Amino acid sequence: MTYPRALLYACPDGHAGQHGTPLRTVVPDGLALAPACTACRRPMTPDGGPISGSWRVDDCCTPSGPGGRWAGPPRDPAACTRCFGTRQAVICTTCLLPGCPGDHSDTCLSCDGARLLTCPACGGEGHVYNEFGEDQGLCPDPRCVAGCVPCDACVS
Image 1 (cartoon, helix red, strand yellow):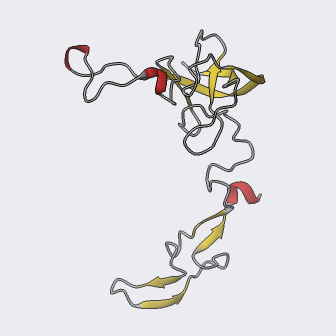
Image 2 (cartoon, rainbow, N blue to C red):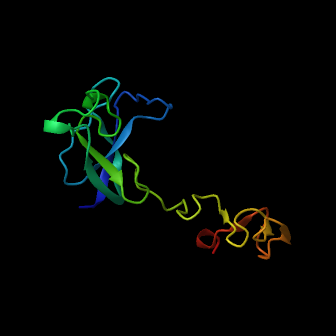
Image 3 (cartoon, one colour):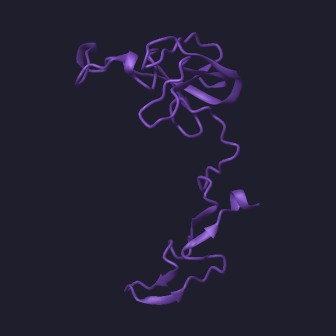
């Protein structure tokens, strides 16, 4: 099942994760998830209004080994930055990242916003080669610059 609307939740004290980014997660409408901050263990609170996107929910921090036991070292769901203690990871169906706010309108998914793609005519080399590996000259695609061509999906 996918969810088209959600709320963004954040730590009320503004704690940040390992890379300095604020601890945030997404809770889709209709799910009674109660995420908690992994730093202070306080319940996270809504951070702004409803957001639109597409999310699915996957199990997280549940024993999956033989006999319903942990395969490997036990995990602490309260310290998990995928599920924030809910044992349910909310995954963006566009980029497949957990906790993604789902706004991909400004980033082209074909080129990841770089506006360039690897040239299919030369394979990103800028030159073409024959079957013996001999250089046959510059790429025949007139749009190719240093092995890259403009992304048709975001240039138009």
